[in-house]
Length: 420
Image (cartoon, rainbow, N blue to C red; front, side):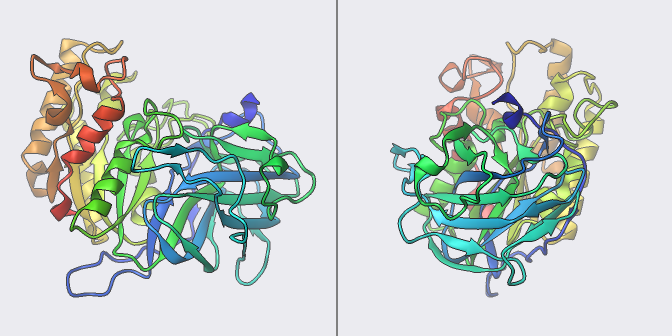
């Protein structure tokens, strides 16, 4: 149903603690982010919430651990929402894996893996409007590179429903009114949704810390293979797992259409505008508050250039990126700047706007006037040598802006792992 797939957003009070980066010779953080998404908006047409619904969100872990905790978001809620019952379980299916196999989840849980999720020892919690909550630790051995099921039962009407529009995989739900959060069978969840509702993060115990990707639709993976986990952030997690570098968790904080400087549909932004608030506005909750956050890869700016109103002054974008870096560094994070990729052939491309991209990339490649710890040159890795203003055809999804799976892999390949 369409209304179950549409939502936009406002601002929020985040009830989470950020762990300091794990430096050499020091113990790692207590928690590492195994999976994350950036809540983007409120579901249009669901202003009274989803009374009686049980939603089974399917997420895919980038790292594993022996204990897990769940983040739930009412960031774009207009009223408190009662989470009557929340569970976490290992999926009976692995999902899209690093070896290239795809075993898509259908909502069924691995037998015996279902666990109740508690909040201060209680099975239910009321999440205030514009707030997020973190669960108690749950003893469950969570594997890396595997689908996990996070189920929420909301027994009462509430305000608007917080969601992330571009999940790039199926999740499942029941309209209730019965609580099905502990049901293991897929048959208990007869309907499908293509977005994530309420859940915003999954942390696991221990681990070396988290790399956060702050980005837009390319980070969101909107042209990657559905249900395959082939975003560039997924390829990065695979590289980390196969390399001598620590197996950091990778938190994807991409929102399609997101800009550095302006909220979605500015100056007429509403909580239903799915491109979200600006990267600068959402930085605290989508990056700085991530469990175990140690490094942020900043890959934003193309939408400031190509969307209306067009930002034609590169210094404005540069100032926004520099401020993101300054705030991240003030919290002890490393900052990797990613160059903006070629986009000639996209509907809004002009030679004048192209020069804005070139100027921003020059600043990034030069180290951002000292504000960057490292550079991931996504542009150089994916452009066509015969026409550097265009994506290499082998990496082009076909729209000349977004990469395909091969392009995503090429991006991940140039992230400097020792700098993370």
